[in-house]
Amino acid sequence: MLVPFEQLPEDARIWIYQANRSLTEEELTGIKARLDAFLEQWTVHGSNLKAGYEIRYKRFLVIGLDQSMNSASGCSIDASVHFIQGLEQEYNITLLDKMNVSYRQGDFIAYKPLADFKKMAKDRAVSQNTIVFNNLVNTKEEYQNYWEVPARDSWHVRFMH
Image 1 (cartoon, rainbow, N blue to C red):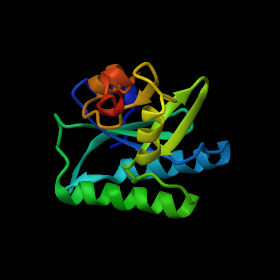
Image 2: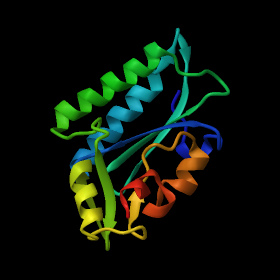
Image 3: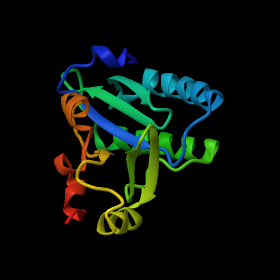
Image 4: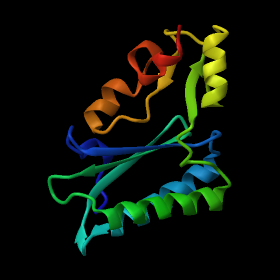
């Protein structure tokens, strides 16, 4: 069951998928239609899942699930991953590779392999003040407060010396 993202509770479970590039308006329209259709019919053992989504900065797909109604099972999570893989193929984008880092460079959002980000930290091209996107947050509340933060407040800090 699709609901507006804003209506999900603070403890809703969150999955964040970062695209390896900015999406065009046309791609965003298509992806929103696919997300609407998928979340409308997303179920766990035949029961509806109450879920919503938002797309941030034309790059991050954020899916939220209200677990007070039903929690996702292995099968429903597999279905969502299969759905995301379909988006990757259809739009020729990468969404599931967790070994990449997104961070702000001024108004621009950069996307780098983790190894490159580590080297940039070593070379001081990024610092503890660099705004990073912590895609490991688990709840809507964490997403709203700890997703877009200085590297010093995220797991990224381990690369800063």
